Length: 234
Image 1: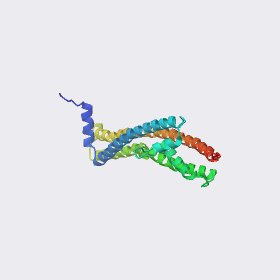
Image 2 (image 1 turned 30 degrees about the horizontal axis):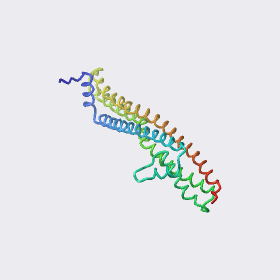
Image 3 (image 1 turned 30 degrees about the vertical axis):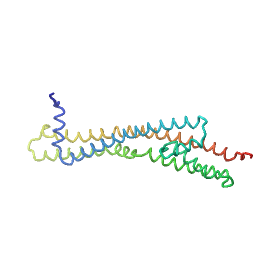
Image 4 (image 1 turned 135 degrees about the horizontal axis):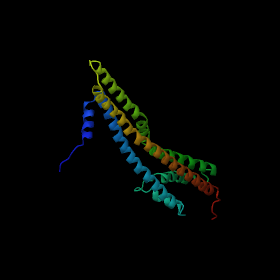
């Protein structure tokens, strides 16, 4: 099978090869940033998809009317690692079981301890959801300027080379400008997907965190009712 390369592709490769060292380094940095961004983009897509699926499954189970102690026991088995909303529940219920012993704490103290434990768990989940998002934001905001730097540098070299020519024409300056503009194009190629992914995942993270916070409020209400309930008569 014969593999053919289009003239445009050959011309683009030639322009990159003939670019100055600084412009080539800029292109290389933008290419690496783009590749890393796409790796993080797909990774976050899988992570958020799993987080939403886990939250849906946990909420269905939690509100099905099952025994919370049994659910806690199953979630804290050695072969089970709770994540997301389940992790918030496990930390809150663990604190509830520790404080709910007769005469060990008041109802207000139990509620405050459970809420504090759940907030700590929520902070861990937010840190996990935010992982790699700052990198996408940085690539999206800085890549166009990095590409513009490469373009300015390449154009500057092109015009400086014209000073040694007695008769300058567009044919002398066009290749250098074309080489430089590739850096701008690569900067946009790296920035646009990163910005779109950052905005999308930030929105998804806010919706997930809102779901976690709503669950925390509802679980706190359950804890408050349990803590204020009179002890069963013997």
